[in-house]
Length: 336
Ligand SMILES: [Cu+2]
Image (cartoon, rainbow, N blue to C red; front, side, top):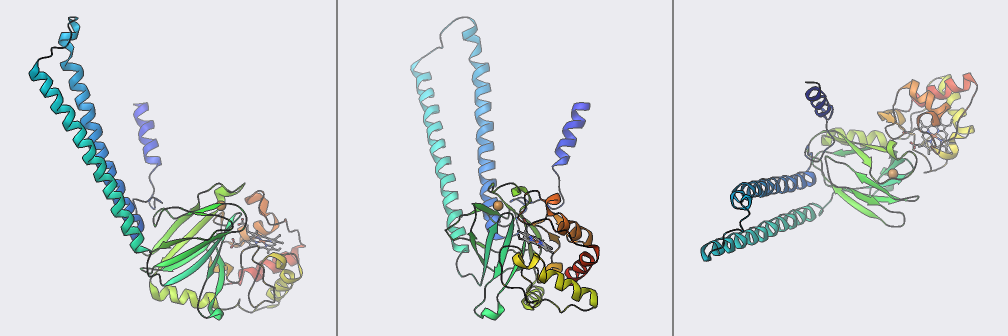
């Protein structure tokens, strides 16, 4: 009973309401790959069952003569039967293997076809340990940079240009498409199309250092009009600080170390892509590449001691007097 209970618990432990797996696909790339998975699974399961059944048959049938110490009986008729079995086995193997190679090839063609005619380009730079996301546009005024949260319109074919300046990373969006390596000095690309509105998890899937496990990417697929509205807000510079406290917070940000690494469009920072763009920080649901929810408390804890949350992160400890700290926090909270 206990063993059964433990097994059931372990199996149930793998359940999730929103599984990040290929089989719960949300786009055509993952759907085709998922289809290929099922073809391989069913065919190999049948082959495995048949082989084991034959083995069982051979073990029980051949038993009576060998128990008496007699060699197997060979007659011209049994010779022919054996030959027919071997020929059938070889023919079936060739047929099945050719079929599987053919299915892989067909899926490959489908995937290549899906990569044509993209209607939007987004540049993603993988960094230790977060994602810089730049929305490209024919009009440079419409380009902007954000971090860790990738928005796309449902049904749109989007080309992601993948770059890295530090080490090798890899982008994996299990529900959407296969992995793609991101290699310094080489631009790879990944085309995605998401057909179901929702929030999907992405991961860095190439070990890239200490905080590799906390390098999450959130993909948000929205209906086209919602996505356009999101684009319009993101293109805006940061809102002006409203009250006295927020104004003081902005000064703390601009005169302290923050502005050396972070950019807030419209506040007077220079342009630095060393750290996440904070222009619309509060429009994102988490901070530090999914390491913590984007609440005031977590934000405060992160600013004072980022290493408490992500040891080894490339952001220094920031100790300030209480007044400056509260003002800074109020300013950051206003960056909607
Ligand atoms: Cu990485």
